[in-house]
Image 1: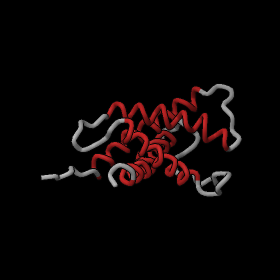
Image 2: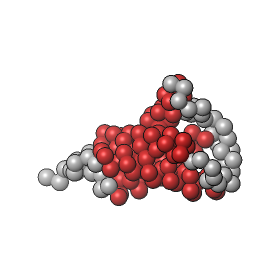
Image 3: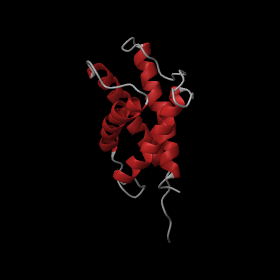
Length: 141
């Protein structure tokens, strides 16, 4: 259960509490136009975008927990989680999810990549915060 369900829940919650909140704060600071918690429908499914993002983030949190070998017995990989979230989630969004929706990378991508990296890096850190909070030591004594 700790290897799939808890990272999945952690990734979902981190998307809502860290990624979307970071976008909302950047919008409140007038640094970006789009705000967090977008209720615009995700085209193929018709669900709000922030829910679909949270589900994708939850799936990628399972991958992150496996790749970084997150466990209560090991030291927490804070920097690796930050970098994983910033690079992997941003790349998945730009090169996998958006092309599936018919949105292709073009033009000056730097502003979008910077915002994506910042929000997704906070997601990685937040996912690790939730994973460490939810995981328990295995008592085999």
